[in-house]
Amino acid sequence: MYSNEDENQVQLFNDNFLELAPITLFLDHSCPPEKHNEVSKMIRKYYLGDEPIDESTRFKVID
Image (tube, rainbow, N blue to C red; front, top):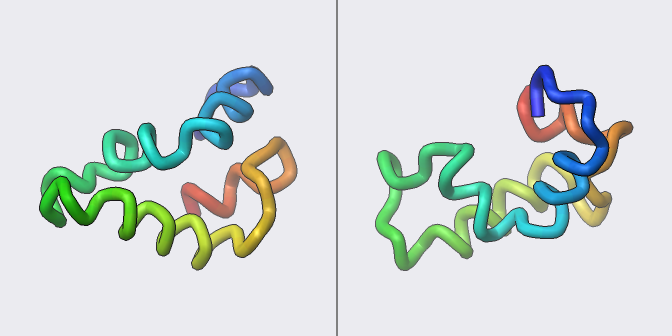
């Protein structure tokens, strides 16, 4: 997300956020696996609201 300008990667992250967020956000170190979906949804809602992750919003996820 930081240095990869490939829109396909950003689209992949948007489409598979619930599967990829626990890995990319290191949730294994901070919450039990059964909470990963719930926490991932909360993180996405907090940083993006209802916006998709795309080239114009991707930095909201990593800031």
